[in-house]
Length: 162
Image 1 (cartoon, rainbow, N blue to C red):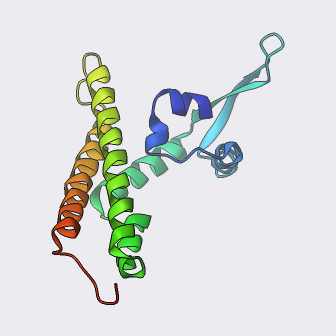
Image 2: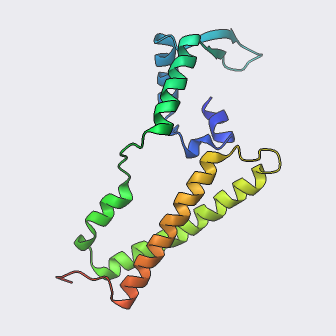
């Protein structure tokens, strides 16, 4: 399951870095009656393979969850705004180096998302909506960070004590 999530690039929107967390999540879904075991097989010398199906309670929970997530903005706490809040803890030169590095990494990420969208668009028109959103958010962050770098270089962004 973890491999399939990664193959479909859904690991960009769902954290599956810990293999156990995927299994624990599936076990919780089974325990709560949201999915059920469809079948179990062991093809050849391969590990046992379990196929699951969503239950009617699972479909209801999925609809409720998606409707809420789509309609209600949630407060999220990403690390970057927290780092900006403590920016004066570093010297301006350190900040400039870190933000310049971030610009390069954001540019690489943007190029990767553009590639994913171009690759998927011939056979999945407008079905990669999460990738479109990631791209827009990344582009906005890139523009913002470039502005910070420019302000630092021009002396428009400074703080006392350095």
